[in-house]
Length: 103
Length: 486
Image (tube, rainbow over all chains, first blue to last red):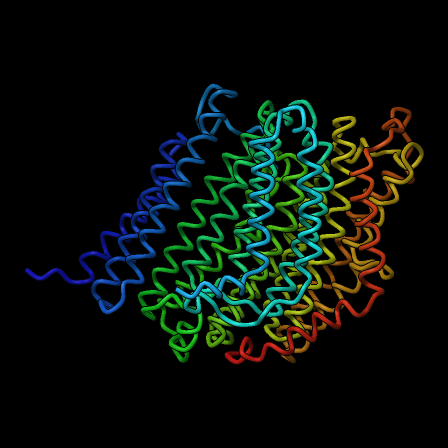
């Protein structure tokens, strides 16, 4: 069976949707971060697949993906550090408890 | 590789040199002399600010990924001025007890975020743009969390970083669709291949892109982080977020919308931006009325100011671009004056609500005077610079000769009157209300005074010295290739 473009794009978009859903519904900040990673990774799949199937002559999408992975790693590192600091001061990472400032 | 193309980016190189000097000072100087690091960083950056006014060579570098022209040069200089004032005002704060041990990191991260903003402004390939955007927003998350002892600072940083990553993921998804449609990420090549393309995918991609950059600009459907982050962050970082970060994002947004997707202007994004501007200005104004904390109040005021800045983008002509840059320049001076006063008073007394400012004129007349000028300028009262910037931005938008845009300008005008109400509330608290326990008289540090004096001069003079707007206007009218797609 030949794999077509859609067979990659549809799972990747479903993955993105799962990420958005998880980000909105999860209460634990670490789980929210995992959802964000899902979203970023599905974008990477998009880039690679578009490159491979539609524009195989250049490798622009592949290179973009490499940089996007590095950026995602940096984002995770910063977010984890901040979440650890929040945990130290508030003793929990539940997003419902992190509501000292509102309106 | 042709190394001479590094000569195309003298401002970036200069900024990196400043960064390296600060870094080396922080690393190798004996710990007794580290108290002088903030002043050292400010002076070196000030020298760099002056030198970067030398004109740069126009052209493209690094395989057309990087462009240097008069507009990017002017925009970087505008950001430099704002950055210099922020650094000047933060000297005393950086040497205070809690922050002193980490002051080196503060200056290094600030300079690196400015470098990211340079890349956003000059990048002509979406890879460079995205790297610049992330370089500008990730260190800012750590800067927001800089007050290590204060819980609010970390709550703000957590909210900031989670929403920032979420919005950048959405923007990257939009970019991947753009790549799927056009097969390239170069601005110039995308511009020629989206011509005449009004496919649904392009609309989705543009909506995602606008929401990603709109997050940085805190336009309204994407503004929910703004008030919390502005309140929790250290005041110096808040002022940096509200002017420099916003200004660079606005310029990059203009370039992307007009130069890259200019062909889709009338069909797609003019109306998206139209709706965003209307709700941004209105919601920002209405929420600002009910704020009592001055930092939150200025956060909502900055949301509505971002809406005014976007009027320059929706105009999408040379006047719009010049007036947008001019607006950012004026906004830098007015907002930094307001935040400077707030920072001084917060550092001395820890008070940040409007009621604490009752009777400030009796005890600290100069601070009250500067705050009054800043509020008048933000509100757009005539002799001050804010009036001229609003005038030019309305002029630029009205030049499109489109009835819908006239209505938009009218809505913005009505909102200006609404905004006068809450700006004058602060002035009223300082000048008319009396309070026995008003903030006592105190002397501020000379660096803070210097920063406030520069801001005051800027607020009074920029509107009256007409050559500033004229030169910006000359620069943007010479950029013919920018507006060829509209």
